[in-house]
Amino acid sequence: MANETLFDRLGGEKAVDAAVDIFYRKVLSDDMLASYFEDVNMEAQHAKQKAFLTMAFGGPSNYTGKDMREAHKGLVARGMNESHFNAVAGHLQATLEELNVSADLVAEVMAIAGSTKSDVLNV
Amino acid sequence: MYKLTDEDEVVLSIDGQEIVCHKSETVLDAAHRHNLRLSFSCRNGVCQSCMLRATEGQPSPRSQKGLKSTLVEQGYFLACRHELTADLSVSLEGASNTFSRVTVMSNEALSSDVYRIRLSQPKDVEYRTGQFINLRKESGEIRSYSLASVAGRDKLLELHIRRIRGGIVSTWLCDEMKMGRTLEISEARGDCFYVSRDRDQDKPILLMGAGTGLAPLYGIIRDALANNHTGEIFLYHGASKKDGLYLVDELTALEDTQPNFHYVPCLSGESGRFGFRKGRAHDVALADIKDLTDYLVFSCGNPEMVRSAKRRAFLQGASMQDIFGDAFLHASTTTALSKLSNAPSVG
Image (cartoon, rainbow over all chains, first blue to last red):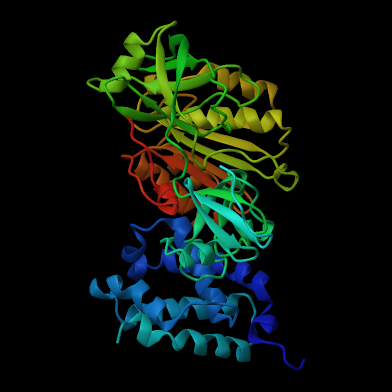
């Protein structure tokens, strides 16, 4: 269909809702990432994950590169690096595949997620 | 005070400070225009960083979308999403800290160290079953206790107090606060209550409590049943030893009269006792019910137990919106959002 955004093609907010629990469960269950989530409020973090997915799905988002950079600076200072970023990206991809999202849409989402790398890692 | 405003303007009051806003601007934009610092992040109704509580006036449905049921019930909304069409009063604090004086109506021991204290309910202390109040001793110490009474049905407020040896407030409460004495309590607050909604009525409910964490759960169970909840209700209550459990007979009797209610008392410290499961209540529960998809999950007890129970419930399939629990820590102040995760003190 002409002029449908990525967000629409993925299924909009419903798709985000379906994905966020699956995605966040994968992230929380990953031993490599666990320590970064130990002290956070799980519910508040869940809301942030939903906001991140909305952005990655090409949805309405007002997050700037600066926001992403600021949000992760403290974690980078504690040792978060590319391997952690890649792990989270991997969980995002696995989530989309679990939801049977077509390969071309997965690629578009992963491209958006990948574009945040330098901000998230503060490089 | 009579205010002259244009028809295109509305008054937004933030903890008493009034600012004049343009009709249709969002609360967040209005606050920023007046150089008031409200936290925010995505500015898009998703991250929930800008959550505030409306104390007068009605937030728009759009500004409450995505918020947990218990927050919506208490008037919380997202500042970036509410467009001002009428005057509104909001608070950055979670709930006010005014205290009311109440009378002790009864004080009875339910076990060797758990006491049930019933208090008169003052007109301005409204609550939802399962919330907690802060109780203040004349010398100034404040402790939080969950309400075990059912709002709207029980005439008196009910607290379950564990008498901690050497505890300033708990020993005073249990030993000295007998019938006729008075004490001060705050407004009720907290996120641990049952919201009666048609679509939730047949959902299974899992409640996990340790020690006097049973108090709010006891209220919530009776509240749900009184609201004709048809789903299965599982209560796992634990203590290290048998005399740490209480209301055992009442809960066993409730099982007999309510076929959808199931009571599982647990003992973590003893080697094995007929009629009791071995282990900590939440460990036993989460091992028994591996798939928590569609469950409403309530937990109450010490902070480590509640954190662990909530996290594991989520990992085992419960939706974040359906997981409730207040943990008891040391109180702190500040922003609305941090208050939601912060907890009260006990002792």
